[in-house]
Length: 251
Image 1 (spheres, rainbow, N blue to C red):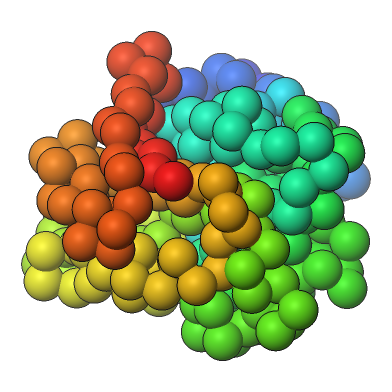
Image 2: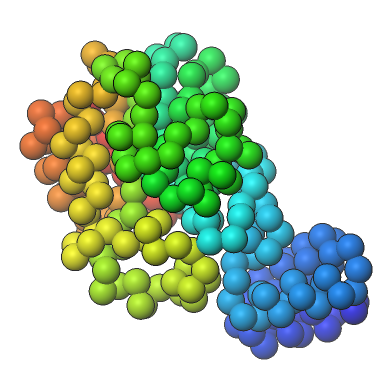
């Protein structure tokens, strides 16, 4: 199958960037049968990144596996903010790491940092171990996953916790709704259940002067800032209109 029929099929399936996606699929396929399977997966709504097994994020390429949250461009704001806040040689933790893309991008920007990552989803942990030093990727529920030796030593804690309200998941694009594990999306009734736990326990893990950086939604940012303030942290909302990113940073 040449590229042109693939473009036609992808466009009919509603792919906005059909030409670019077709070129990537044709390039990645080893034979016609594999290309047909890949095109069918894309027509069925599977994220392109999961089909290709990789994603481009903040200047690096990361491995992405089926079911694992695909890194969004907007999350580069969290990485950039964490890189600016981290002291030389500091410990950094990518909590709710998914594929580990944020931690890997931070390490690319700041190779001097000791970067750890954690996620509750075994599939995400396995994927993150492909993108980060495997012995620094930990499996478990939020801080329970982290080695005790990191308590009170984390210079920067970057978090992309699930923040989609439960009732809003049905309104998400099928790429996310049907092909990313729900644990990576569902933030509870108002989307902030996981953030509440993250903010409440963060001071126990942060080093003196350390920073917490949490991705959030535009409308949720004031509440996220309030959660940090309730934990005796001093929050600041940051945004990047070009990539649609919103985050709250506090120390």
